[in-house]
Structures are given as C-alpha cells and as structure tokens.
Image 1 (spheres, rainbow, N blue to C red):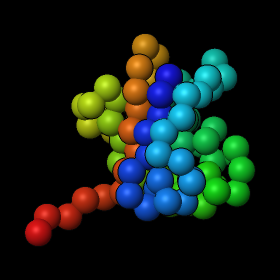
Image 2: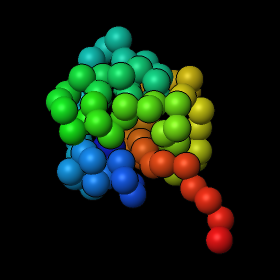
Image 3: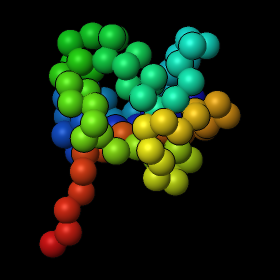
Image 4: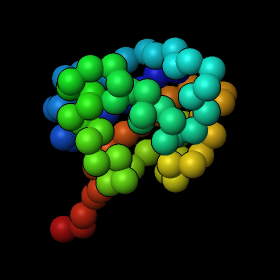
Length: 83
C-alpha cells in the first residue's frame, strides 16, 4: 500500500510518500501508526503523539480504529484549522 505524509508529519518522517508492506498483525490505522513508529527515530518523532494524527484511507477520512485491509492509499496529517 502507498502511505502519504502531509505537513509536519512529512517533515518529521523525511519523505512525502512510500510503499509499505506492514505485517499481517497490522490491521487498523492505529496498528499501522504503531508499526511505522517502530521503523526508526524519524517515524517515532512523527508519531510521538498518535492521538493528534488524522488519517484517510483512499481519500476518505477515518478514525484510527478503521481497518486497513484492502486499502490502496493511507494518508497521515496533523489536525487542520480553518482560516
């Protein structure tokens, strides 16, 4: 699956997008965040406060308990404000 990072999540990870193959036990967005966090210091820094991270699966906003099976693309971004 393709994972995209936006705003300061992208800045901290160091890439805008990448293809990943998470292990079979990674089933939800929350699991994916945990797995990504374990991939190194930059990922750990980007996801150090996982509750503030927003996610979208195939362009639809989802909660972190959303199942990722079958997803082609998952995007992560910080909370957004208007203005």
